[in-house]
Image 1 (spheres, rainbow over the protein chains, first blue to last red):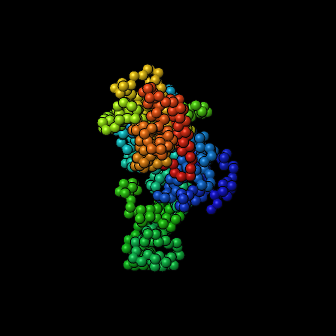
Image 2 (cartoon, helix red, strand yellow):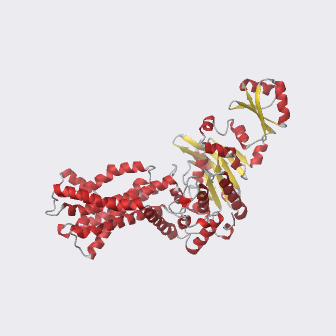
Image 3 (cartoon, rainbow over the protein chains, first blue to last red):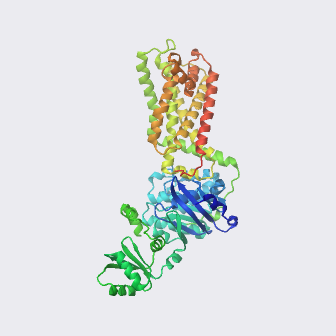
Length: 339
Length: 274
């Protein structure tokens, strides 16, 4: 993969294109590991855009490049027409960033944190004070303004992070897994703020997530796997490409049965993680055909409307969480995943 | 929870003024450094109490065993400028541990993605540390009359300037060391390996004149020697020497260290910043 060739082939007209964020043939490597392998997508203005992918899919790398923390090895990334690698200082003014890790100083009060942040963005005086007041109001922390952040709950600290990212009134907001470690109520709040920003203030929001349930809430999605873009579209569009229902069978001999199903019904059958998966309209009727055709061979069956995970499996041939990860998941992630 | 929209009423300011990119951010980073320090009481107590203890224990202990090279001066008196430099050394270097903490906690990330020049980050952090260690150093000067120091106001001002220069140089050095590090234990290792010997060989504990030739060479190229030297000349004018040379060396040392810190912070890489 020639990074230089990729840069050269980037057409120049996108500089004037209406995309809020334009990613072109982005390539990045850490030593020998390729983290991003030629990713291209656009984010439209005032869109709530999701970057979905399992751990190690490259979404954190993408986030670091977009937030100007890191220079990509190849390809280019533009936000509001500014090149993230070549014109970082102009770009930094225009974007707000909320990191996954805590970036507030817990030894400072909420107001002090925001005042510090404001000064970094060249804001000062009455203007800054007014902004701090209104942004705290907005994230529901106005009554705790004078308290040190170390006394805040996880949800409140996240809201303060959000306030920090919004203080300078950015037109593009980037968030890296913004709901990590939050309880369901606090997570709903965060998403409510994001929608509000999009609807009332026409802010373009890009959010990374590894949670299917959060990805469902985005206007459009880019799904990453092993550094490559495997799907791009609205959640509905993506799920629509799956014909009908998704049927999953638990059987004793998945390989042999899957080939027999394939021959008999002339359809695509996959074996994923020891289970047979197939897509079919009117799944409930087809299931009874299956039971009649292969009596006694099927232990269990499930029929469901297509989910984003089904889209992921269809595009990559494997599950969203690898088997190892599934066992290694913390109870918290597991709990979050179910929502 | 009441949700009100404010963003629509806010106009994003176009900042073209470079002053705002350097001074205001540097000032706010400096301010945070000070506030954080004084909100951690144990740090305040430790930084003031430990050098005083060190000075009294070592000074008294050595004092009864050795006579200092400078005639009939008591060792506690001889050791006083060295103890002052030690306070400055420890405070300066340790305040820059906050660089590593900021990086680990994630605070530094939000500074790195702000429209702030790297020199503002270096300047703010280094001046923050410098302020703290200069203050600690000057607090220790309260003991000066006890060790037979009787100098005028002008000399005290020069002492303050010397303390500031040494603080600035060492804080910048601390910044340069801390910037690429991701663990405080590695930072401690560096301090033990290089900085304590640097202090030991600065004329703080024993004078240059009594050392063996190769040790004397090391002491002569050690910038801290000139800090100790300048302080000794200012506090005990009778010892004589070349004050101007020492001060000039300190200024060069400060500039060099700041340049080093600036270079470290300006590396924009394809590696993750945190």
